[in-house]
View 1 (cartoon, rainbow, N blue to C red):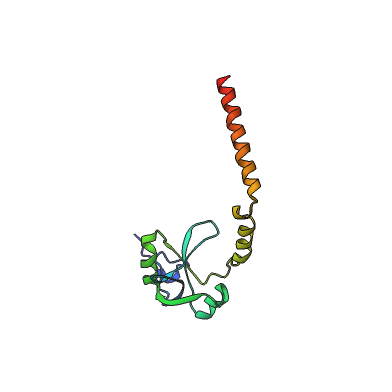
View 2: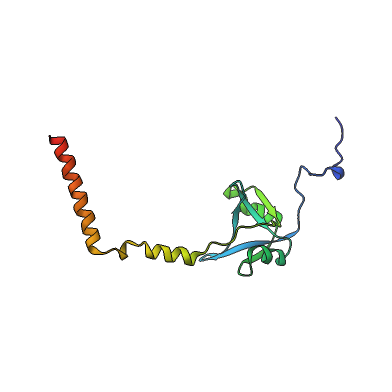
Length: 138
C-alpha cells in the first residue's frame, strides 16, 4: 500500500470545514428556516456564502441570512436528504414576478365569468349526457 499525500490532492476526498458561513433563511410562523435550492440538473443543495456581501450580491438585499458552521448546515440538511453544499454560487435565476402571475389568475378566475356562460356549460353538459344515453339505449 502506498501512502497518500493529501496536501497535493487537488480535490480532497474529505470536505474541509469552511468556517462560519452566511446561510439564506426565510421567516415563518415558527421562526426562521434555512432555504434550500436546486442545482441546474434538479438536485437539491444547501447554499451558503463566505460573506454577507456575497449573499446580498447574489440573492438581493431583501434576503435574510444567519451565520452557521458548515457542520451545522450539513446537520440541518441531512434529515431532508440534502447532501450537497454549494458555497458562494455565482449564478442564480431571477426572482419570479408574483404580481403579474396574481393579475393573470384574477383575470382567468371563474368568478369573472358571466352567469349565462356557466348556464350554457351546464346545458351543453346535459345535452352530451342525454346523447350518450341515447346511444347506449339505442
